[in-house]
Length: 214
Image (cartoon, rainbow, N blue to C red; front, side, top):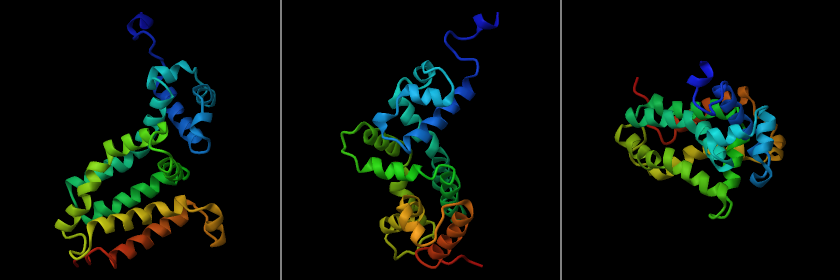
């Protein structure tokens, strides 16, 4: 029988339930304090039994960590592509990927910023640092050095400082206070980010990147 063949405790609608839990966890964790987000609240928002959180993620910490990993997965994949082929296109595509993904969850970079200001002993910060170390830190440490070796960056530019500039260009619009953006007439939407991306590419092209050969 189908029920007997199915693994005990395995939900039939597994993919849908898991994705709903991650989606609503991200929605809640980016606007509410970690302590205020209960597994029951996430499950209610997702329209599933809270037992599904235990099944898929173990507990709230596991759900938070998985949410971080899956949100950052497209950037991780693009960084791996860049590490395998340190080309100009792959370097610029990393920023394109970041903007494309973050416009879907514009509060996510702010969550990262807020969490990293928390004490090192805080659960959220420990989970965030664990995820960052696992998926990006090893690559970031050598990524810009590889770009110098590949002739993408100006040889007289400090790779570490280039990395700071690059990260700043990516994250600033998302972590800037909304009131500050409003003063300058800026609205975070797909059109603005598309224009900003092309502007940032021009800045990098005429700044720390070597001119493209014709």
